[in-house]
Structures are given as structure tokens and as C-alpha cells.
Amino acid sequence: MQEIKNIDYQQELLKIIPPNITADDIRVIKKFLVSYFAGKASDEMDKFWDEQGITSAEEMSKYLND
Image (tube, rainbow, N blue to C red; front, side):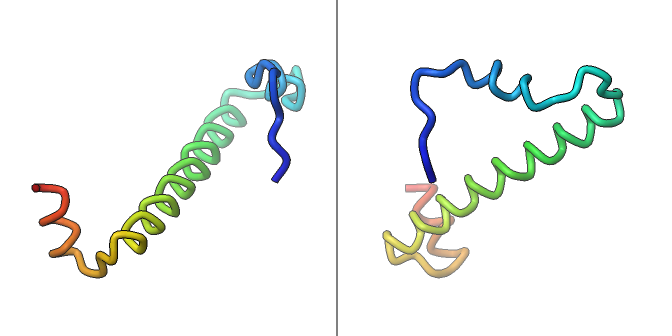
């Protein structure tokens, strides 16, 4: 994935959103973005658990409470 550098990301996102967007469209876009970033965070946590060799919920709980 190509990384964009030195760009105002909010401005870039605004460029792709049409000017006549509805409140319902905004709710759908927010839901999509939350889901997208939650998925990325979940993938990173899965990668972390794999790197730590932690395979069960019990091991995760112990790790988090130590």
C-alpha cells in the first residue's frame, strides 16, 4: 500500500465526498470508517498475540492483568 506523505488527510477525504451529501450518508460513512479502523486494530492485536505465542482467552487475560 502506498503511503501518502505530507498531505492534510482530512482535506483529501473531503475531496472525495460530494457536496450534496445527506445526514444519512454521513451516518453510513461514519459506520464504515469505524468498522474499517476497528478491523485494522483487531488485525494488529491478532498479530501481536501470535507474536507473543498467546493462543487462548485465558492466556490473553493473564497477559493483560500482569
